[in-house]
Amino acid sequence: MSTSVWLIPALPLAGALVNMLFGGVIGRRAHWVAVPALLGSFVASGVVFAGVAGGATYAPALFPWIVAGDFETAVAAYVDPLTGVMLLVVTGVGFLIHLYSVGYMHDDAGYARYFAYLNLFVFSMTMLVLADNFLLLYVFWEAVGLCSYLLIGFWYTRPAAAQAGKKAFIVNRVGDFGFGLGVMWLWTALGTLDYEAVFKAVDTLAPATATGIALLLFLGACGKSAQLPLHTWLPDAMEGPTPVSALIHAATMVTAGVYMVARSSALFERSGAALEVVAWVGAATALFAATIALVQTDIKRVLAYSTVSQLGYMFAAVGLGAYAAGIFHLVTHAFFKALLFLGAGSVIHGLGGEQDLRRMGGLSSRMVTTTIMTTVGAMGLAGFPGLSGFFSKDEILAAAFHEGHRVIWAMLLLAAFMTAFYSSRLLFLAFYSAPRMTKDAAHHVHESPSVMTLPLWALAILTAVTGVAVGIPSEQGTRFARFLAPVFPVHEAGHDGFTALMLLVLAVVVFAAGLTLAWILYMSAPVRAEAIGRPRTPVHALLLNAWYVDALYDRVIVGPLFGLSGFFARVFDVRVVDGLVNAVGRAVVASAAGLRRIQTGYTVNYALTMLAGAVLLVAFLLAR
Figure 1: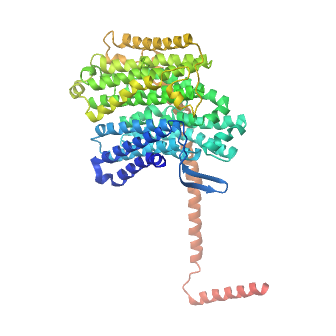
Figure 2: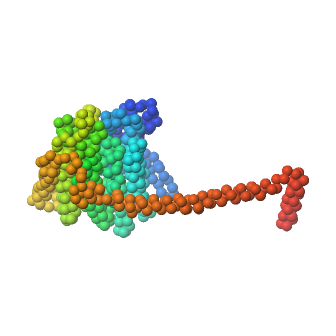
Figure 3: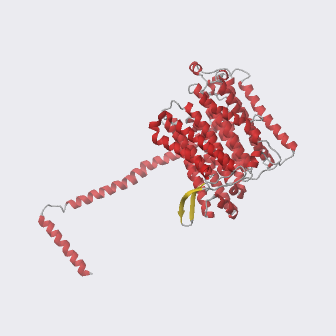
């Protein structure tokens, strides 16, 4: 078991190092290193998953890391059913995205560099999941952020991509600062950062201390998982290659925050107030981001705001104590969101780079496989009955209703209606409505190669069967919840059969209403391209501009900081720093000029100086 555990991160790391060091030699064969590395990591994850299927927990250590006084920590893994699930998702979806990238990136000049970064990203995420202590978690928390910066800004010659990479890095620094403070406070309070020791000692924490630590950790989660108010980096992350977007949104970075809160459930349970904050922030983000996705015209930005919204669902679930439901939605979301992003990438590839929904339409007859696969993904996201998203989303809604948080339940239900609407809108505008593309784009349309469509098939199958396989509720909970029972307690059915049936029917009605409204607006009559994105009302303009949050941040935070930095550059840097440096230089020059005066060139002067020095030395010695 220990060997399989460490093979999971070791293989992607080896692939990354080989492509970094020998990419110039390997060139277009870089995928022959990167893709098998991920396949091997996925197989090892399967072995580990099977090993924890009975509820076992393992803690294999690799080597001692830090020994300083009473503080000791090692590079060690904490492997339980939650770890097994996360590893399967990260490596499985990661492998499919690597395979897809072979076709999508085949003409890119940075081919070897791309696969090196991709392998490094998966290595960092697997180590984050495997970490058995908060310090190791923090190290790879930062490593994941670094990899996202490298991949979002992969096309660094494009100003927008370079700016998006910097924005993601800087916004995440805000959350990571809070996360770091939380880790330090935790060590100060308990004297340890190892998971098992922390979770055993958490009851000794004062509730106020537990609340403070939990909220600081959650601030880090808000940054990584793009929750209010640190959500603004994720939509701009679309500037990176589309497979990168799929990896970030489905399997790696944005799921780290949800995983961390779920892993730290014992700490958050100690503070009821912190869990309340998590639930409310999650519900607010789910609704907020869904409203923005309603009107976006860039296919990738629709999916980006959808990710922010669905992450809100996950946080709402864990905040309500329904940890298994939140992780189940994380898993199903990974499948259908990766499918949607890769489907969008196939569309962009087939249209020669076009991303604007206003210039699409009619693709159902030209890109049949992509159409079918993207439809499955969109319906999974929308909550089509029987698909995985329907089961995971309904479980979260049921948990909110059962826990008595009716306002949160109503917010999530409204967000579910909006999700069904914008998912259907994307499908109709891109595939099923009349063609609106330019002649050049229409001439360029073609289906993607099999290396890109095979991952779509795999993800579509997972989207279709996962819910039925492990998500059907019962009095003992879903099969998925029972699998995670050693980590989280199973929530038994909290309401009678009639109430459960009514909630289920309501979920179906909400889905049907969203789908029907989208069909009426975008399919019942021909839609002109210029009419789709034009703001018709102030509310439409507000949503199209994402509630002007970016503009607000620019005005309130970025602008004043630039002004302050300019002041320091002009005044403090020039007058104080440069003045001090120049003063030292002038003092040295003046001293040198004074010393030059005693360099006369006459031997008699030097002899007199030596004699005077000798006399002073003798006088000093006699005086002692």
